[in-house]
Image 1 (tube, rainbow, N blue to C red):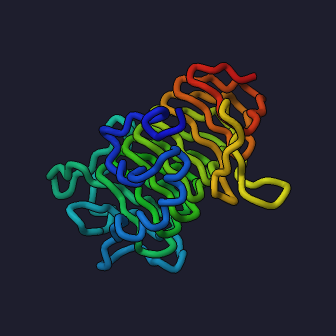
Image 2 (image 1 turned 90 degrees about the vertical axis):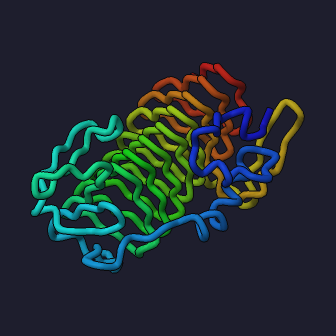
Length: 267
């Protein structure tokens, strides 16, 4: 009932190993730092963006493990998550090239970008971070470190993500906060969704289940949202909210801590 496979289809997620050895889905959050220490690649050294937090002064293109100025390229900004970002250089297509737009900020080089990724102006990414193929990091997004983002995801305008996992096709498009949380495949957060991760009272976050209250072992724990969960605008989850697949969280709802079964409607 509470294991990762009860919430997520992991067969196509390239980082399913972060769930290895877990009994309950949230235990992957306890694995995240160690997993990313060894799994995270790095931005190339040559002509790369400064790791000290200086905004890029011009767009850069990442292709075949190299970075080079975007001024030499023809860039088409299509639908990123559908593979619509395209780059040509000297008349030749660069399939799978990623684009780092002027004004983007990178703190540290332990930042891995997949194929066809777009990082827009004003986005700030701290190491370590893994960003999967065809993912869009929109203007003003803030990735605070230990962010494991799958394929075809969106981290949107003024959305803050910290120590969290996005499975493939998860989207937090507008004004969201995602802290110490896991978003399942095809999860969509409505504008203004907040996944609260810290109790007012000190101590570990506990999870209420039909079998009693379970200690999570985590002092900070936001939410587990199973595959295809949808949240309405301005909804909030309390620390330790564990929501089963295909559930709906209605606009302006506050979801209590604890387990909510699949296909729940939470108001």
